[in-house]
Image (cartoon, rainbow, N blue to C red):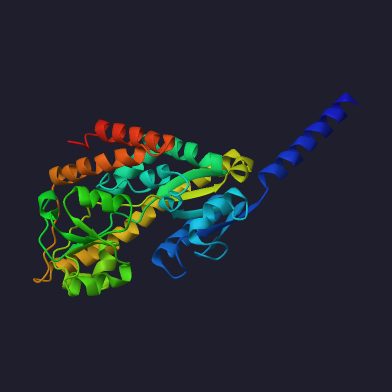
Length: 338
């Protein structure tokens, strides 16, 4: 009798365990990119890998920008459970806390995606991001990026000294403050007006998108002295999801999500870098275009100037100060402030 009862209990446990392991999770994420954009395609491939790695137990329906809420409202929507997760630029939430703006794009900090990924994955950035996001009901899974943004110029630029007096199109906020501190003259212009403004001499240079996009859109025909790789801007694009729904995932699915985002990040960077390298080869083959690559010491000079502006942002909130302290400690430990 006792044996029969024990057998029944064990059978029940096995059935229950199989039920738990087979539980399926269906999620809806919203991207910051429109459907048809190359970035959106890379993100869709990530969702396909998650489904394959989980044996179909975890599936993600990825929606384009604006499908449920506006691009700058996804943090609230994910925290409230309206969306299960998002893929977006962290800087869109700087209005809630300056810390988001500083960690999203510390102008001048990074010379390559790998530097940022090391900071996030091994330098305390992962824990910092979760400390920033958990109060809003989000769990930070990991980071990706579009890579170093391009910089186009009509004037030769080989270092910080060449920025003095340069009329440069740059977005408002930290990046304008940094360029001004470096001696440039920031100009407010939408991206749609960059080409004509360069062509007509309204500006001398522009903080722009990645090199391949600039090349494809003909910016290097009117600004024949691009800087590549870029030296100033590289956005942190987060993959985050609702905190309660993250906690409800079994440990193996959490691990799949975490590892898959790291793979996704490398996939995104490699794909966009290939596009940039192809465009770079085309640009260098054109005798009318001269591509400039800043040496490490000039990048460090620009970073030092930027740090003064980071400190001003750090003073605006307790969390921003935490970002500043961790970031500068990491850069110093890695010898990136020399």
